[in-house]
Length: 323
Image (cartoon, rainbow, N blue to C red; front, side, top):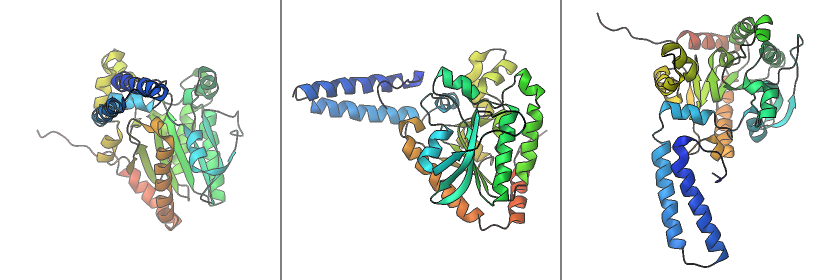
């Protein structure tokens, strides 16, 4: 992690120590002051602190990492994992929603259809991308591309990274709920393999709108939830300060989701988050795609739909207290 990379509150001890190490390296570069021993000691201490902090993160801290401004987004992963990407625009009804991007690409020479939510790196781009919160035309574009993929027997890969679908008046007037519901129904019956990755935020119906598939993975520091911690805290306790409590109660981390059988696996991230080594994270995603596509392509179409149906019907395990 570069010393100028923005850090989170719980990362302050790491950033301060990294800054000291960089300063010490600068001194030893200019002058031979015999500080190599001290430098090695600080680097060992840094490794220990990183391990202690990142291996014991609470759910709220993982939510913060999922929102890290340097975290890779959909277009970053497409560039690192795939080749020959051709973006396809528009829903053929109203407009082209830039909060969802998608198009044709190649993975090791095999054609696929890929799409996902896209956030911006600065205020200007975030306004264009609507902070990754899609309008109805975004979901209609996504299902248009998926049906195109079905027509040409291409597998679909989607990347989820959104705080939720855009709740504005215009979006509601153009049928936000209907667009998402339509996608859920249609994705359930597409006769092609669909692999889902939650790469950052997986918020509410905005995530589900491109989230019905044969395999669902969540990155180690991403989250997938019916509501954001802030929204949950506002409803239950009427104060956003209780967001850490809400994050814990929502069971939204990758580990929780895997234990409950909601997802199929966790994609490992480098220590400290995907932004510390995007290429390593991308390779882990690529490995999962290749492994699953080999198996899913051999599955008969009718069996694929049946398995997908049973997969989602089985979600929702609960227990009742004894009377």
